[in-house]
Image (cartoon, rainbow, N blue to C red; front, side):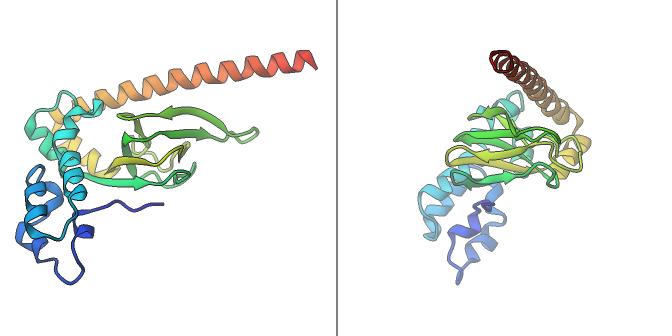
Length: 209
């Protein structure tokens, strides 16, 4: 599994004083861009991506729409950015559910393996989509598997940190939970339609044979 890229990874091992001088640079939004250029330890693409993922781009993602700047700042403190090559299994069905993902580029297949059947592709998540929401619900394990169809990038939040934020900032929590409810409802609708279609195809093939 690919590890999230961080501001520290862009700096040389021998000098990370830029991090200590600025504090946790991953949480400073657009200021990271200017700082990354000045310190000289970051490639241009890295601070730009981090800046967009920690503030401006958050407001463009459906999950965060409706949040005010203060709410977005709170969310920015929770996120990391991960890049996953094509074919990467981000998490397996049955793995510990500890992270929530919001896809910012690429495409991810959500697959489910019933106990007595073949693996089903439940849906394909595209840019702006959310997956791994078992972690936000407090479930112990993921109920499905997430696999990158192409190279993908996502912002990643620890489920326990998100739940804590919702508890300590109820107004923000209500908005986030409403967005998650919409995602879950849509996923369940898609799953139902997909399973019904597979059953129909199975019945057709059985009748032909």
